[in-house]
Length: 545
Image (cartoon, rainbow, N blue to C red; front, side, top):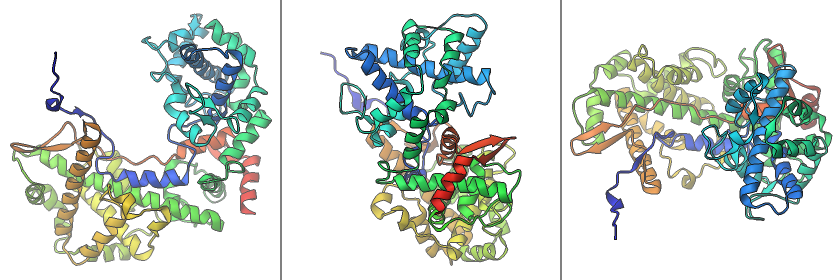
């Protein structure tokens, strides 16, 4: 009998994303502040299209087995994307209104171009799971990969009611039925069953395009009710989603009023939630309920800046470890070497002898004000430089250390003058136990650092980052059998594994939220600038009342 000695197999190496566990608290916060929308749920009409597909298949093919269900579903998924892309080409060519972020778009738009050139288009060519041209690996395509979890959380789908996922009777069926009223379901399924897609059929099916959502009154009302958390979607975290979306509407209005020419963007969103000010330093004055939401988002952004600063310190240290021929068997031994390198000495020369507390006081006295978040020395801009220039060979590592340490000093200084309440986002010690570097632990360390020289503080920060990475990677190895080590101990000492990881921001679901607001007709784009529609203004006014 063959024997497999699995215990000697090397662990599977993976790249990993959160090498310090610093991003997890940020994700925890924005998940609470914008529930029901994720970083992969890009379009509003999928929230009604997917329940309709399942409901419609059940009515038309009640005896279908799983294999035939999956094939028909996959054809529907592809056809939906083709309709949207075709409608964009035949109307205003505005991807945001039609085909952007539709499932399988890259492969399917190329096929549509070929169809327009006279080449035959068969849906099965893209849905067959053993095909080199398949549109999606997951058997249930965009639903299985992106939307199933969140639609189940919202009780629109019910994964318990059949062999495969189903719509819920209470919420999913009314949404599906409202979608059905606005489209030609018979022609849609005849096209799917026939396999071959024609341009004429795509044009006749245009009402499936996401841009028609606002022209489907009952469906549109269902999705407004969902996203803005009116009954029955007003339980749990639903009201927080409403407040976050309303905050985006308010930011759009404030930009148009006080910052003409400045478009709604993720950078503006980050600066606004962090500082409470618009790009022109004008206060972003929100109604009290939305002001509280903005302050909670500020905690998210502060955590993201902390994460970038520590990622920068880790990257600088691993770059130095990669360059040296020496091997170190303890983190402490490497940190002693690191602090003696020319790169670190170059950084420390400017603040020779200064304590952390003195650096903090100097920043409070001479650094950019919180509202001046477009200033080059502001922590918002410093974090962006760390992310954007990390791989740039012309970006000296001494500047990387300076930017990362500067972020930490700035965060500590802001906390001296404008402290935030971390308990408001549920950061208990139990929640944070697996993530040693967080705003709570950072605040505690700052207290101990005030009287210590900057060199000692930097050494502790680097040691903290390296030890945390080992802890996080060991936990991942124990839980999954996968190795995410960026440096590892060997018999000869530490060695860098693969490439030094680049710092990265967390993604706070901004793009998805803004796109959904466009899809449901509350934001529009005119002459390249985002503005409120009449419906968006009406929605904002109702929340102010």
